[in-house]
Image (cartoon, rainbow, N blue to C red; front, top):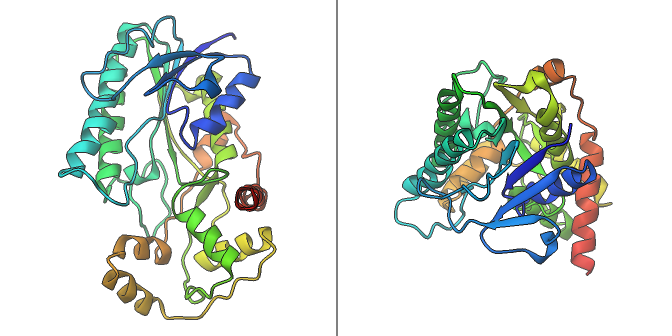
Length: 318
């Protein structure tokens, strides 16, 4: 069925992969942007300078059937604000609440919210699913969980349905953050002290995440549901690095350094949270979306990593 869609975060990492896919399906797209983009000039663009509880979404929501809300304040390596937690709350929680309220008033039919597994936790020794208790351990995760709760409450007894997606660590072309750092280290061939780590982490290739969003647009069984999404193949940190090495035609040198020493080292360097993620586990069960929506990730982990590695190599050649 023909649909008009409002996208926030269209120029971000995930949005830059989602928008072309929506174009292929001939959706009528409106994009909310801080500043107009020449790359997206073939779509209706609405300038939204800041997302908070005062943002006026009236023009952006005109004649919109579905909102896909991806714009957010994500993890910041070097904070520039005095109170980061308040900033996460202002944008990710209060900004989302405001958009949901105005979407209901504008008679939007469906609201898709890109949350995060961080709304549950960032580390766990047990497998996480949608029934697991939520104990977010970062300001980002807390702000996402509060937004989730508000969406459920606001949509109750209204005509607007919602879908909440909680992706695990997302990787792919244009990938920022830890995955790009691993690609750089592997490309340089430097010895990595990660050979003795015995953990298990769930990931999701951006192409698989995009397909899960696409599925939720039209699937009736996605309405008023929360789904955890992952590739479905969990890896230890050494296994991930070996797969990255294979994709880049490199043989990583993994030194068997005791994890306890790595943990001490990262804390001394002020990188304790990064060390915890490298050493710790976060394994999810994403069977709910597979069973309820008949969704299957179109890419394997090896395929996703190969595409990511190709992007990285081409980027560094040019």
